Image (cartoon, rainbow, N blue to C red; front, top):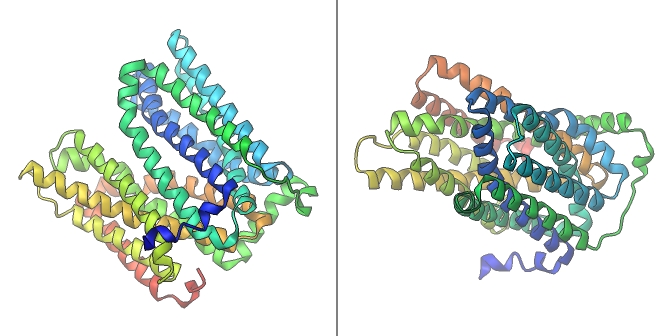
Length: 410
């Protein structure tokens, strides 16, 4: 009951609860799309290289367009931009499903639609960040953002659980149409949000000046700059699990692909739990301490993964990787929620769209960089050695985070 009581205040924020509901539907569709779209792309291309190219193009708008989008949306009604973005993505997904159904989809069209959908998303993300302080009071930031994160993770988990059944029952095109409907549903709920459109004084400036102002703001405000660095570091810390988990499962533990599902479900469940309990922890600990605890815990879990015995009892092995994945998710939830809540607390309302878009752009750009570093290490060191290196690095880094007086205000 004490844990639930920290959320009582956020339940009174009716317009924010509508936003959460829209995000739940959005995440559910995203999790179905993640499976159906990749399945469809591989059926069309039949090539791992083409898959890599398509997903590389998917990241381009986030890296290069989002800083511009964050400045651009300052001039417009955030709610309307979110609705247009969701409707646009829903329409593109429906067109993609139709072209696939009539066998007219090819790799080049896939790239075109992928970039187009990511472009809509590049405008949707900063608008979604900027609308939060309009519909949620500052005293509820911690519980509100934690609730949004945890229920979104649960929604993704449910989506993953039913995605296979949807594809099996309705086919890839049917699953894509379900995804399209979720985008449209999200847009309708956002349209239901009652919020007054406010235009800041800075919106009268030209877009390039607003972008420059956003970068200057991040550079001069020390706390925000540190949070951006932590966003990049988080992505780099999560990279080994994202890239090495398949060879770890297949080559090290000698398990079937089902083990990947166990790790995925465990990780998402843990993240939902970590985000959910975050507000209670924040009543006793500073965000700096929770962040340090989460990062140090990720390092410990990496080391623990290297100790899982191979070739023994399958029940024991599956149990260990499941528990460790849950622990990884819990600590990831602590770390990511600490960063997002701190970001929202410290960024001025006028800069949230721009600062958030630059933050997301930096994090997206760190993915290929982290992948290149990991690829280089994989040529030199065994998988388990790399996991040990990342684990020790994370533990040392977050000991400094815990001890640093400069990070006290996080």
